[in-house]
Length: 146
Image (cartoon, rainbow, N blue to C red; front, side):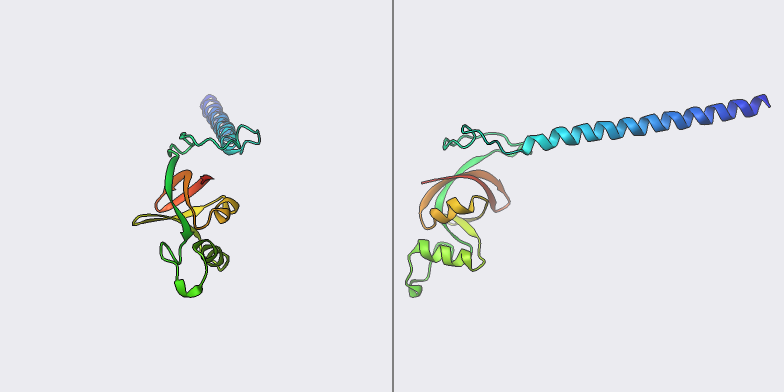
């Protein structure tokens, strides 16, 4: 009878310790996820919308950089068709409206652009400076400057 009491006691203690460990893990994970979610919230202050371009480290440790080139589209690249009879800006807007994506051409390099569609549309066909982060051949645009 004494041996049954000891085994039952230790099984209950093991179960209680496991429950406490699981609860603690869930609590720590939810606190960490909540803190991480607040990092990527956009700022709405006037300072956040400033036109000053600066390099900074974003949460994923990717450095924001400045890229220079001409805004075009993924279909035409650096060479727009003269047969269409449109300017480079108009051709870019037509191609993007037809499903192509904005692109930045700098010499032999072409980068696909994501984000800030209104600013890219306004600057289509022009030489610009773009601030953003590069992943593969895609730049996540944070600002566009003439």
